Image (tube, rainbow, N blue to C red; front, side, top):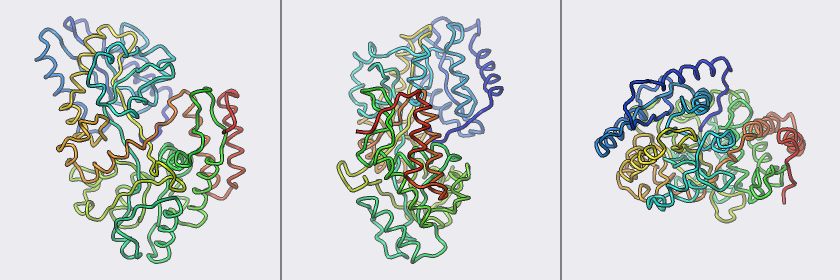
Length: 452
């Protein structure tokens, strides 16, 4: 998930009704599995459609008498979630296989929508190829696995080597700690006027762009307690690391190292960064995602043939360079089998076809995903598919995932509010942290603990 989206209940209900009518055909052959997945509105490339069509053909040829019915759900992210959950409520409408965001696994398990896959996985040798962080993202609070991941994304620092040359900074830049980032941004500000030194997403409007790839990229690099303690099953009050992350955000904006605050708080800042500021040489450093280069390829929103020569990449360092030295955040999607699926065994066989090494590599190349299989990560075709893909793939070993819990969206909103308060100067770091603690207690009905 790259951006949070909020939708009207009426729209979600209408979308759900459309989905229900699409999966109850009486003419379906026996042994037909229904596969539901998201089709992004205005997606003319249809990457998932084409990929699933390819695998459907392979599967049906290899399994005579078994059929795959593809059910694309054309909807934005939150609309898709609402529609999928509506479909999974009844055996009459439940698909046999669904494309499930790791963000929602625990809440959908709690609602009784998904079935554990451990019985299948235990006899599947390919599961050993999946990296541990991706496995953990598909594992629920009950310790069981409810989805097979098909790829992920990572985050790091993009920087403009031409601007760095003008500022007298090295073009093989790799900051060792947070201070190195601030020093580079201050140098750009002093020596290259008219350029935004550092983009760090902030505030409520950009949603997870600010919270996940801004604040959490900092917070998880402090070595402090995470946002949630799975051992005690409690949310963690603001720690020193939490406050240090907020203080970094405050420094960027009070020293005017970041974008103008009116731009920073624009909900549409992400496309502006990717298709305007970076290609036009207006931004020196950007803390952003592995997918950013998709904007600049021939089929992207802003084709930019020179981007692979102009843009450099660096890992986000931990706060003081402490082990492991680098940090990243990841999202991701999985293939999951609903609890009310009619043909779970066939659905599992289709997952295995989807996630064969050649097919997994094919999808990651088509979608510019970061591989979660070790054999795919070493595949020459994958590694040569786009400049920078090898760099962002290596960050998987340092990555973290958000707490995939029902309360997280509200917790995220509270973090965004704290970021906005310090970015605008409306609040000190200490006051913003206290306000967050108060909201956290209310959001979680008091299921909080003090950071250790």
